[in-house]
Image 1 (tube, rainbow, N blue to C red):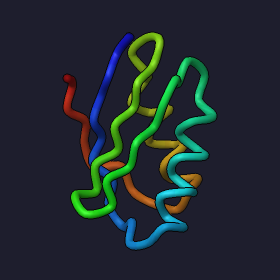
Image 2: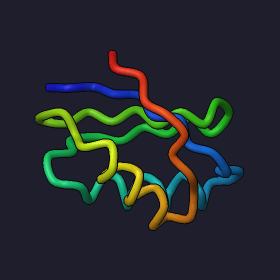
Image 3: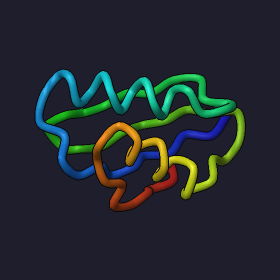
Length: 72
């Protein structure tokens, strides 16, 4: 299991959390998505390392901007 923390810009409300959770959660291999609205951090647990571009595309589809990743 791999856990990464991504920084997402532009989230301001519960709808934002739901949108990002749904889009990132739909990526292959994702087991869980936790969004911290205050910090803008999205923690993703997955079976294997996700491609950064795939996560960026999912976040973009939700209407927000991926600004970085921190491996844990």
